[in-house]
Length: 308
Image (tube, rainbow, N blue to C red; front, side, top):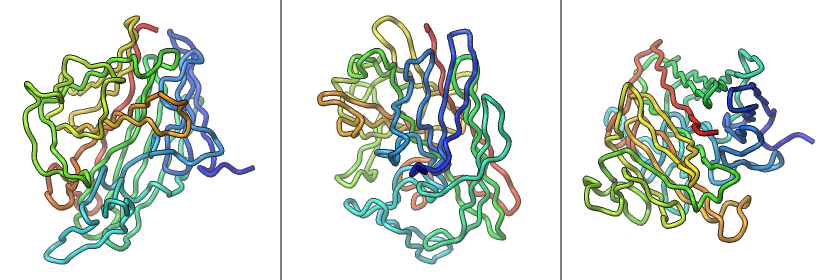
């Protein structure tokens, strides 16, 4: 029977910490599973399901939300489909339900390609790709976007991975978010303000227990050291899984879910989402990248494990 996420691309590599295995889907280029020595380091979902709450999907040409699905381009109103209808927002870009085409493959890497065609609310033509590669200490993910059209196009990149250390309850992990500014949002989760995290409950730079948190929150001013930001989950025994991102990813969203269908009662899952631009960037212009015709933009993030 064909999977609802299409072809499943299985990657494997023998690493110093054991055999690493990843499964990437044809639809949305989702990271459906990553295991190390049989231990899940991402929140998996079944092959016969669609990604619940966006597990592992690619967010292009914008991450997070566009308020009312409406924005201005050269004085003209653009109206996107309201893909978050309960909040009247457009959410997570235009490739969430799109199939990708496989390109270069090896045992431990795959490159997938998808086109964003001009459509209601986004009149641009983009060629995109994403490469997943298992490396000795985790996973490297490389995104490229090429403007294949005739006008400059606004773009941003995000992704929606959920992390875990599968032999430890996620509630007992410590989350560290190395970012200095927190976004305030309204009841539709659109930004209404921002403030330094110092002295607030949103200061996660020193780490807090996941089970004590309820989050669907964004941060700006991600700390970049040696060209990388890094947000970390730490187990009581000292093992870690980190989401790292290059200098283009100045923002991060953290989402705790207690309602994923894969979770047992009382369990929690946590998404740590790198973003090159924040919520509603098509309206604010904040950190958007404008690609001229023919230009290509490349960004990278990944996961890194220690102590295994």
